[in-house]
Length: 518
Image (cartoon, rainbow, N blue to C red; front, side, top):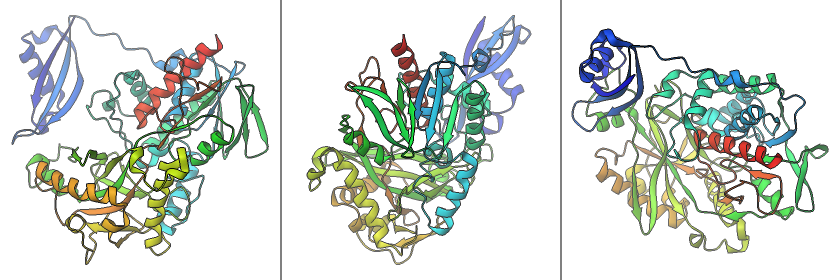
């Protein structure tokens, strides 16, 4: 028998198993002798009042201990001789599709243009310290995808899209802390994810899957409306009746290749803006109402949104205790993103702060057709680079100066290693973005007292929140309507937004592939 109760604890008590048991037993009104197991099922922070609490949903197993859930990996068998399925991209969509395919008895063969997580580090160092951008190995491309080195958060609102618990359990079985199974906003950390990603690769290979790095897909093999395989690095032909396309939101060459092969793609709404960085102590003080954050509390976060002239302005990918990193995927552009380490102990907090962009906003880009949004992205990224000195230093402005439309006399401290340049971002950004952002940040200051401050830095540009392109697929069988055997998947196809949702989409697509072969 299980009895579930909700208890609240002050931060210093939240990890004390004895106190958790005592309070749960008292709340449940059961004798402690009957409790054979006390398990925290869900944990969240409640900072709505002066005293900050942890709220815990606790499961008390009465009279008999629960049976341990069998490991998911125990269900896997070798697929060395099974039917091959090509997966393009070794991000969360591609890797979790591969794990699901193995479980279903199919052999995944993965091609990724980038390098494995260990070798990727050298290219990340090069872009951080020397401003050198490797177009195939960077914060967006390579094993684990964009999330491996630039995020690590596992929160999603896509609860109806798939089996969140299965994804989280697989991450735990590959080395993540079990805390992610109970936290309301789970987080692994960009310093921990590379090892987990490498462990997933080891599992895929141990059960007969193949993973090839430095393997850029340069052509699709098609015949009479059917996918036949792919060409890698211009010369290597690989055939399969099913291809899962999980390339991420920055693989712009793939979109062009699809058009060249007369495989339909379509434009979709996206968002674009800036990264805004505050001192973490300020966010802690605002959210927790404490001049110094209690040791047991994590770095505070926020989520803000408003409407300005018919468009949403909202914070995105908030990184408490985080860092801003250069996320360009080609020379001649400045793109920024956020990341957090597992301890979230940076003195800075940052969040993408973006404006929704619809097709009718892209005036002047109509000649690019389906690529209008992509060209709009490019124009912003190149404008940020053109303002600078040829390095990866990013244009920046104090938040209050940005809102008031004036150049900052100086820029503040930052976590962004390449450095900042004082710039008129209110002029560099397209008017439809700048105007709404300038109004939006003032509104955010009203919603969150202390947010609107000259201590905060506005840094450009946050332009890869999502893809402006969708690769359409049938809702029931998840296959491209006009190309039999092609399964668009994940963020790059326009069907996910983050590690968890991409992983779940990969699992869903893998099951669709299994149905395709039956």
